[in-house]
Length: 89
Image: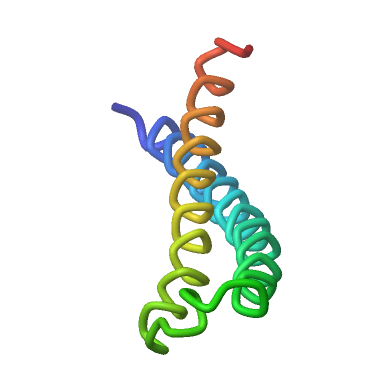
């Protein structure tokens, strides 16, 4: 493999990792934007939610954050690889 091929491959890898990171940030933002008001509203509406511990309430808020980050970053990474191979949706 020529050194130029290696440089092209590294640039393509860096492009996909950057796209995956920012896709994950976008997904995490959506997750927080959905979970925080929902948990806040449920906390005022239902006694069961009010009785949850701080750890449980934190999990209700943080879980969608991580789900959004990892799911969107994986989808963006897959989309970038397909785009580089010339297989676009």
